[in-house]
Image 1: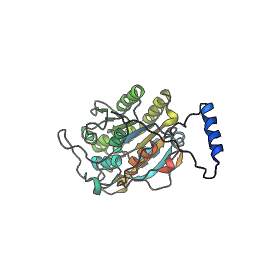
Image 2 (image 1 turned 60 degrees about the horizontal axis):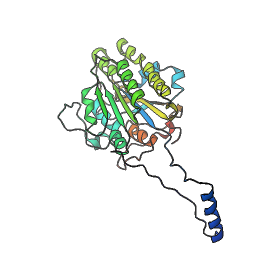
Image 3 (image 1 turned 90 degrees about the horizontal axis):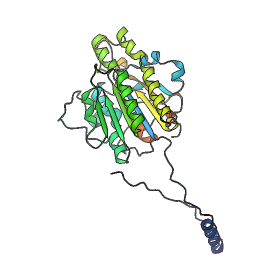
Image 4 (image 1 turned 135 degrees about the horizontal axis):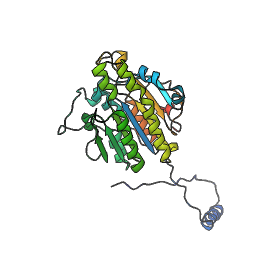
Length: 306
């Protein structure tokens, strides 16, 4: 059940206004059918978060055309957490705290095991009465979506579904449902990196397809008529080197962080960005409070109306 939405009407108090003037003012308001002001709405009504599993910042930077990069707020020096692995990194990305707090240092999860128990962008959006949905490429990502936190959680197995198919399915879902929060996870960069090596020919081919994923998401927002009130965050959980990752090497820990859409403020992001700032940015953009125990802080440079 969605909680009832409430608003307050605020009016300045004039301590010295004569009583007669007050009566005249009240009569005038009634006579013209004055209505209380509408409650303020957040500038952003929809957030799409695209996580590119295993996408190195330097590779993505080389693949994103300058014209597309100029349409977004961009950092090529954002940092993930240690260990730079899928579950620990996503736990931070989605819950606003580092591994020392969320305690996810493992990298495997099976159905039937405990779900992630901390507050996340999913639980906070659901608590506010919004709709959250997720499309993921790895079953272990469902760990972050306990019952009641999302209305839809779809696992599309790689490589039967590639990154283009996952984003397309998510885009069609958005067009039909228009959720408040849509999380999309694609595993192609990570899978190809492990199989054939980070920065190899096959890996770079996968990375070359990322601009089309971004454009597809921006297009569905435009077609839905919500582009001006939407934010698309594109980032990664970690990078990689050779055929592995998980270390503190810059190749593993430096990730791209980009924001697009009408709610984004284009330009280079100068502040230091850490992956757990992503969760705080999602909530801030939607006008939702950031939990007091989160260490992540909103990337205000990326928001048009912070």
